[in-house]
Length: 292
Ligand SMILES: Nc1nc2c(ncn2[C@@H]2O[C@H](COP(=O)(O)OP(=O)(O)O)[C@@H](O)[C@H]2O)c(=O)[nH]1
Ligand SMILES: [Mg+2]
Ligand SMILES: [Zn+2]
Image (tube, rainbow, N blue to C red; front, top):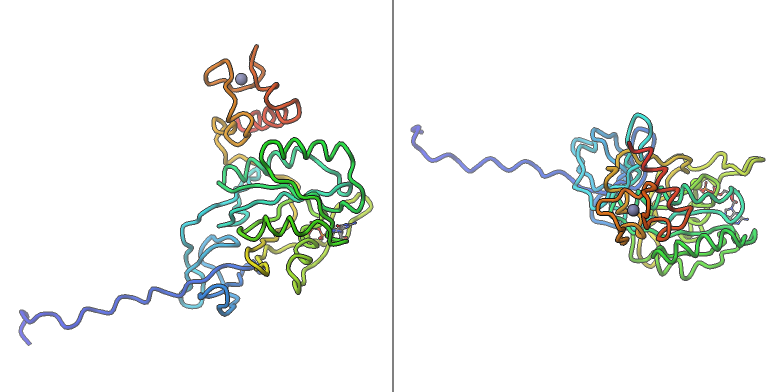
């Protein structure tokens, strides 16, 4: 064979690898559903990439080695690190309880900002309506509804209010976010029959105990998916640029304040309080101070 002979057939292109989706975080491993979705085989695999629940991932040599670009990335930051709560979800449902654990609008405002920054739609689910619906809570929720966030009043315990909720959920991959103990897992279990997850017990202060520790994603019969994640107490937003915060408060992003580039931090004659009301403006200003 002379050195001028044309090369033999080109080397076969390397195996593109097998793809799948992360459906559960299992300690340091993940449960992956291999393609084709949604019926592919399930495998528990070690991880050699920083992935999140909901990621589309490539598997090579028996490990997860890479993930595909994400359509959405819900982030939460703590003091020292930023965490991807879930990947590729299109809807965030903020789950709150009517009475226990106590309703806290401040956390709602933060989580709605995180959803906006992730490019996700957001809604609010008031669970445990069987425990009564305090009028202050309903009034607060009506204000969020006026801002364009759909509100659902439900009871996982009594399986009430689920039809309108299901209608909202079917076209989406939805992550349930909220304090532990509000009933996220209970709600998941009535929406997706057959799911068995740890249900927490509330301690004497109404806080969740023994609750969900591993994030997991479930297919809803009739379409859509739900991602159940551990409860959150804090939801840091350090990953958001301060100058962009107003974009995730719909009443501020639409406001034409009398000052150009107004920060709405109490400037004389600023129109923000009229636009937002006291509570929402306080949340915004508190976040602005945090994001310095
Ligand atoms: N009264 C009432 N209790 C509920 C309801 N949903 C959940 N719970 C209870 O609230 C506690 C926490 O529920 P869990 O689903 O673990 O909450 P998670 O931490 O948000 O996932 C459990 O004791 C549930 O039985 C509801 O609709 N009504
Ligand atoms: Mg739970
Ligand atoms: Zn202003």
